[in-house]
Length: 326
Image (tube, rainbow, N blue to C red; front, side, top):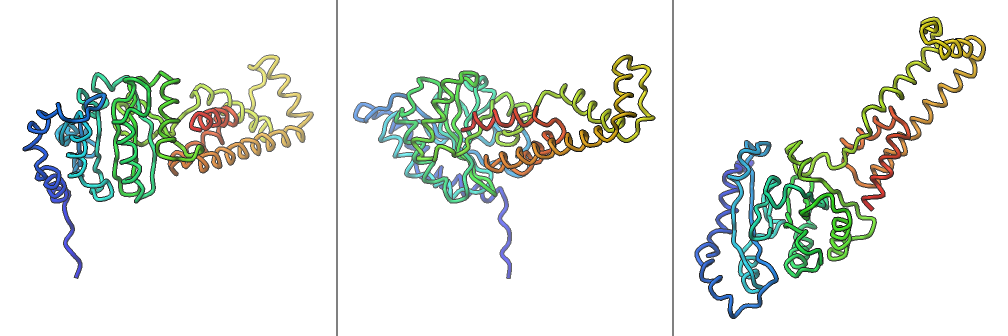
């Protein structure tokens, strides 16, 4: 007999019970009053937890109501007091997030200390998040990144098909610091150098109301579509339907085009199919780059179609993007 499905509300209640009933909330003030005998950290940090029910997942209005503060710590002893009572990421239900942020910050894009920043995102296969999350937590509170106040916090997100770990940075346009954070993240997590990391600004997250989608949706300037697509259409008309071309209104260019259409038709046919073949070859190269970077299927198709339309204008942009990710 099939078991009855568990609702999001029941999962949320069960998860919060373990986090709340471990005496974290009741004893928080007592622990904080004993700082004198503790090994103090350089800063104070706060654990947060969210689990967004189905009806709230796409609603920015309700995010704050799902955000639950677990406790703040400023010493090694306080940290282990909280951490030892928390569930491992692998034990959390889907659409759960564990956050570790500086005491003065909430894990929200529009928060004053976060809004000009962004985040590095590491996508993981299921089952890997617990070990890497603990390593990153210890590195963050141990100040191993050496970037001053540029790190706002870290997040571990549990999703149905994958888990994600992200580092929130304070200023997205500080390329030197964001690259240093990226390299240090790879080092402390023992990631291979070619492991792809994605960066997304909080402004982009606010624009599409999502943390992790569209990180690879880098577009070529839409103005390129006018000359390139227009040129290919005109090329096709001159090659296969030369009588439809209004040569007279195009002036000298029209007369030159008419000369080619009626005197070098075979060369035009070859030229047209070579141009189409080059666009297709560039689109295939773009597809292979996307697969190598582990870009999701939706954005891989977008890159393929964009490159098929724009050719090297799109491929060149993708290659620059790939170089940055490495």
